[in-house]
Image (cartoon, rainbow, N blue to C red; front, side, top):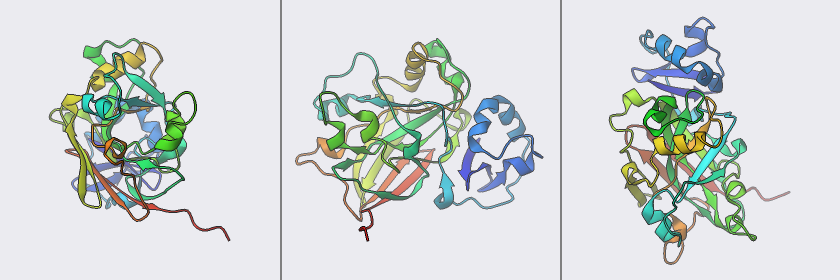
Amino acid sequence: MRIANAGGRLKLLVDGGAVDVESASGGRFAATPQAVYGRFSEFRQWASTVGQADEAFDPVSAGPPAPDPRQVFGIGLNYLDHAAESGAPAPEVPVVFTKYVSSFAGPVGEVVLPDGSVDWEVEVVAVIGRTARNVPRERAWAHVAGLTVGQDLSERVLQRRGPSPQFGLAKSHPGFSPMGPALVTLDEIEEPDDLELGCEVNGHPVQRARTVDMIFPIPELVSYLSRIVTLYAGDVIYTGTPPGVGMGRTPPVFLREGDHLHSWITGLGELDQRFVRPPTPG
């Protein structure tokens, strides 16, 4: 099953098109995309009865498939080679930070470049499908609604400013957390622990890896987080980026005005962001 947020309305994607969930269900399920995660098991049963699409789906007009979660987590240094390029040892436990919903964006759009040095980080994004507390690793996938493509864009100057890292703020400028175009449930994914992901800048490949190389795979992340906090349906986890970020290059390379960032995960979809400068005052 694939679901999407089109114009702020929940859509079920079928047969190359879409079905408006509120209309097709006779109001049984709300139009608001975030609301579906609180009834995800029931919704999946209903979705299995839906036939053909009755409208087109355009990723250009799509929003994030989980637009308003109660909690947003980011995972740092979750690939060995990315830790190395960052000058850090491999972590012994997940490196966790928070992101802010105000940074969320859909899969296609423009991102205004703030002052500083803006870097790319393609990531698998997991959305929680039911409350998780003290979940063992072997049962963690059962608490995941599905996966989507994400970028954890990062402004490196602010990130490193001060006596301790400013991960949350540096990764939460407007538009810095694009995701989509759809949330894909695990039954649609042949190997959810081994997905190929990557991104390119202006057509030049900069990241390419497989999630099997994660230090802490998604089930371990869900289990670890659930032992410390309660994960709620609809919560979002940015699961970490592989090597190839701009900060790790010699010399470092960062995104500039006019750049096009294309990101992809096999079986999940693609993102496209273009970077612009803020308009001149006056």
